Image 1 (cartoon, helix red, strand yellow):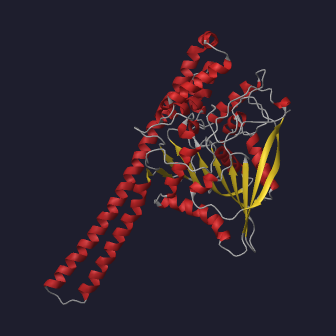
Image 2 (cartoon, helix red, strand yellow; image 1 turned 120 degrees about the horizontal axis):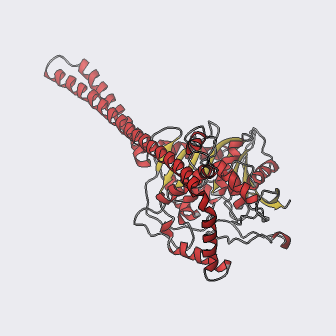
Image 3 (cartoon, helix red, strand yellow; image 1 turned 180 degrees about the horizontal axis):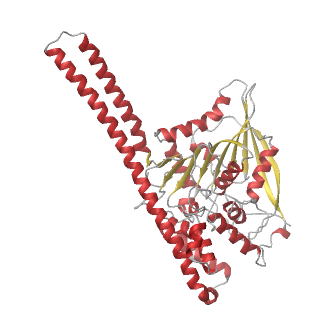
Length: 499
């Protein structure tokens, strides 16, 4: 997990809590600021629930239109048939019969075309998944085999890398700044679907490499890994990182207790409409924003908005939305940011049976996935942007949208996507020929890039996308449309408690 997420603040706290190595927090523009169209519109790819059908939003929007066209043709054919029955036998009757038969045949051809398009898309996706699965299996096998062969040379490679780093000009801060400047001026290096695929395979194959280095044959990791029994995967890789980190003198990735403070309560005039407005309400300063919706005679409903990573030091200081929580969340462990969010939810009065919609960006999406997966809350909707939570297995029946960029490698750090009932919407933020910004690192992961995708999402016409977005809108508007309804917003900040 690299320091790439933005949208937070620089961690602050007592001086005694600032002894950990500092990490630069790269700030994105505030969510409420106007965001210009920064990329050419690339198509939205939509995967509906657990289906193998993957297609562009435009194509999926045409499929029901073909159904409606076929129904209209068939209805006209039946009207012609009724007219023919009322017509005496002769030339006119014969021509009406032929028109009826032509109409019925045309309706059948349109339906056949619709089925053929859907079948072609499903077959393409199934074939692509099969190829990707074989490539992943080969990658895991090679990782284990190479690690076993390279084990004797690891000390030499480690020493060589350390010496090379030490001989670079400048102190540690200057070296890190030089690396950051290089990445900023060469954003295309890490902004591509191909690089994201490499990252996903690296994080997924870390455990295969460890087993190989331990001397176990590659087939062991194949049997236990994601291509086999699923015992090993990105979660075990992240757990290994945590175990190694906590064994270091600085206790990297060491989790702590957290405490949560309610910092503001205020009435809110309106509910958000659409994906772009919900993403805009994801906080940048406070880590958790909770909107409580009340209507006379009805139990309260809640929308929980969860912030992205705030700081990237591997040593936990006072900020729970940090790199430690990122790695712990991917590992499936109770990260500080997850526990803090659940404490805020309990403080505002959310009961286990209260209806809740969770909305998160980046680490906030990872937290939302983990909260929904816990089974402790009645999650009726889940909307995430750029989150590395694909490896989190959600219970059946949780609907919503997961919005991701294929050239955003942060998403890939969560590993392969588990089957889900959510609609997954994917887009390449910076397609071939686009000018990639150089003002912030990993531009495909920035909030402004996802804000552009959210606007495209709101304009989507496919039934799969519209059903999910309309349901998320209806969750709040079913209450706000009633007389006497109220919206109250609660804001929370959390801090780590050293132990």
